[in-house]
Image (cartoon, rainbow, N blue to C red; front, side, top):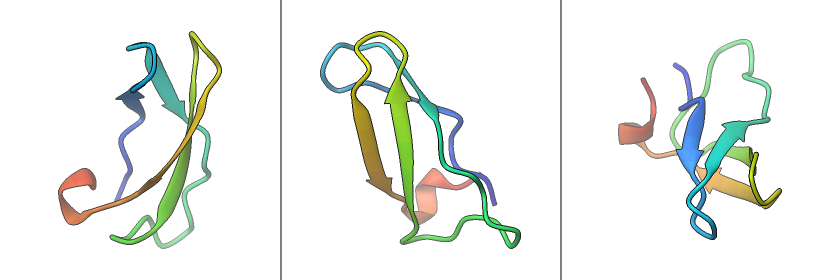
Length: 54
């Protein structure tokens, strides 16, 4: 299962890109993934929920 490639930055509204590598077995609910905003540089660590995985 894959995590979203991008999310919206809470601080500036820019695009945050996934910087975590997917495990061989794919992401599962409860895994923590990291994103970096391309506009402001903030890092976001997000715990994945079932609805987040595609």
